[in-house]
Length: 605
Image (cartoon, rainbow, N blue to C red):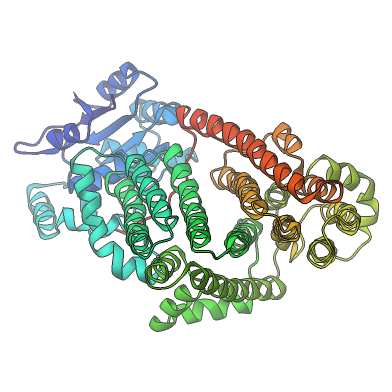
């Protein structure tokens, strides 16, 4: 149980003790610095501890933001400071300095909590200070100041601020204007009934899977129900994040579930639409697989670009400056957010088209919309990269190497090509990745099934992939290497399955690409959460992108079409089992040890 130590002279009529207890703290009273240090030493090391000035006046949500957010080892607001177990040593050291003769800070204030915070700053500790906005948090020095602070508290609706701060600061048009105005109240309803964000996330997944099942019926009623349920699933998807922000229930497991289930919901729905179309005599599995490939590659472009520029220095791109200027014009902000077809706009389009048209039309619209948005965003990022002068770090190069997902074959060949790679121009990595990928995809698409040319192209792809990663990916356009690899592998599977021209080959290919895509998303979430790269044994076991592409081409060359379908199915099941078991094991273990989680922030309070 977390412990709060109230320091200083208690104020008659103050509600601070009750507010701390309502936040789950076990409250102890301390008369001064020495007493506070003694009480601090008695708190078990595995518990959160807070030091709060007894004269504190402020909103309960200000205390909640300052003292209960699980993401930060150290946090402070005026009149209060808190430390989680990982930062207890720093807090204890700062407390000892304040209890020593003469203190240790340069801040001349009367509040012990604020002096401790200043001591932590002086020690170089990373103290999180939440943005309070209109919320009040103060330590009044006299009765008049206390009265003014209480009037300021009364003038601001704490609950209204809390509801506002539950909503993302930046979101899509559909989410902002059609979902969040009421989903935040659903989040509050869930919080008051003790529901957790993970439970809401699971409910969203179940709703989407039911929607996929309705779409799979192939009936008009089923399609209508599927569209309605898909929107309901998205409402719950927004609610889980808003619930996490409303109640500060952040967790490593929750961040992973939210990100993973979003992909599972959308791609399961694609499969449901394809099954429904098949019941009506229309085979759209190639379109469903194409939509999944395009959407996944879009995400990889986003991830790779962001990781390449995560800590890059000297951003002088005029393209970025133009983008910032456009963001200052109100209407352009929403147009640009809608053009990229974020999840809200995308799911709304899919839901409406499912209910009113056919799966084929739905997939055509989805492919056209995603292709346009992918072209728009990728072109803008290429221009930014070419027109900026930036030094990219070893961390960025390591992240891109992890995203590349090179297997043992490419790594072995890369070691022999390092000398050659160093003598080649900076554009080499993305250029050879594109050319090698285009070669294997083109031969898979343009030659007859069972021929040797895709296998020859796969060998060329292996060598070009090795050359692409033979030196650190620090070039201006090296962030394009991972998406080129993803497109090459996924499209090769798609075209070879289509060329097999046997019933069931494309659904098997859909399953295989879904399993491999999950592996690639899992890599992204580990990088974003600073949880470390995938274990080497896992990458070697599933072969890396070049190894899987080579194996698929070998199978296509040696097997008959029915045998190839069976091989795709076996590979899909095998890859899915390996990556899912390892992923679940890792994230559950990370959750138990309290690994950091990445969450989108809400609106400032």
